Image 1: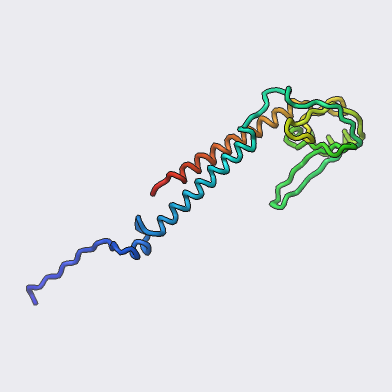
Image 2 (image 1 turned 120 degrees about the horizontal axis):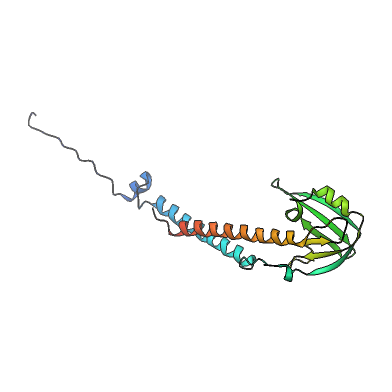
Amino acid sequence: MSGIRFSFKLRRATDAGAGNQHGTPGGGRDKGRISGMRIMGIILLALAGFLAWKSNWFHAEKDLSRYPEIQLTYTTCKFERITHSKGSSTRQIVLLTADGRYVMEDGVWKGHFDGPTLAGSLAGGGTVRVWLHPEYSHALRGILGGKVDVPPQWGLEYDQRNMRTGMWTAAGLTLAGAWLLWWKR
């Protein structure tokens, strides 16, 4: 017994089942994770493309020439705070007319006016010049000639800000989607 030697050599198991159990490269779990990441990358790229398409390829007006200007006779104005299911809220003023509702989001006026005060000032009704969003016929972008003026330039700046935000969001989605699509472990 004195002349017997034992030697052990440790080697990585090459068994297909062992790869899955230990998370070694080439195991089924890693392949599933990589394919899941690629699917998520495709979804993010599709979302970025949809956002670009829906926003008319991030076209923002350079001036007020495409904003329709009309004379609007309204009966009253009110302030609305809409609370959404996730807890966020939207604040807007609404001009009520015989033709329906005309809405101005708080992004246009909130840097200059308090919503209830602005609605209270316009509540008496009257006829004003208004500028409308080029694609949404009841979205106001400016009011002139009433007790309080909201210059249409504020609405133009609001639309341009929204387009820049959308463009940066789509760029981030595109980069994340491309990274997930082509990422290899």
